[in-house]
Length: 368
Image (tube, rainbow, N blue to C red; front, side, top):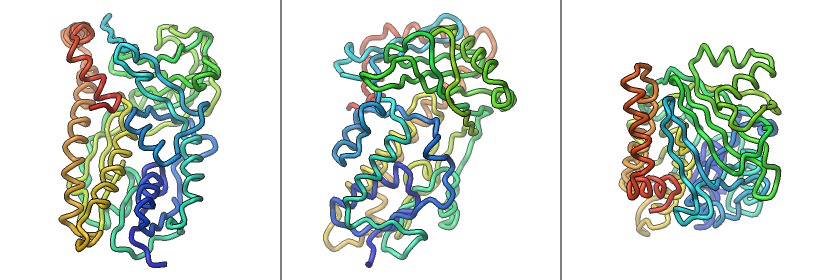
């Protein structure tokens, strides 16, 4: 088979793009990941997906089963000196602020959908095609081969992820604490009708603290999580392994060239504090598929002029999100009291800001 597109990287963004392109009957080679970063059967990560991402996946019949997608009915964000911001889905005219989705459930549904696409073929190595799309993630080798400069600003933080059962029900609320430069997030699990006591935890801490948390006995880890969350959900019980990865802000200087394009983490990384990383990657896939669908009949699928339309459409949005999350991360990393007073005053003012708060909520939920 002669392929139109070769997608290097078969993660969530790569699989989603393959399904989108298959709708236009493009012949797609989807390259299997040779060395996946995470074990798909024991992956403790969970993603916060907004309404735009859900709509996209539903059109592809790849939205996870209910037990793997928990609606977030509200969010509670706590500062380190009494500041607090609260969001509620009903107040913003939505059924959910976001959905917390299991990696395994989403990967499985995407895999099922691909089995019914005769124009998508799994391959073990890259093949020749008029267009190659690089979806290999932040450590992409292909990106280097195309001579792309990947500008990386490391955060002095490591993310620790795990699953825990809680003494008290999470009530489908996502919670986040900013404290002494560290950021702790609880993401509710169990589906809309399932158990309400399990959460996915992402804790952004210093590398030294991360090493200690990784090495700590389960009881000590549970105790530290409970203390950092001010015992909001009572006693915690670790139910998974712990995963860790360094955090960074990064962007590629070029997202495309003649015959190739970058998407997802191969093009950009942001701090996870806003939970927008995968939403940005899925938006990349959606926009690239749209640009290819609307191309002129005479224009090659690998045309640089065509691919630059995709780059222009996505780059500004990604840079804005990166700047916003970086600003928040830097603000809460300042240890001195004047900064603590300022940021907590700002949180309180924002919580009562009305139109501004509604606008931010709509953006976070993927609404225009």
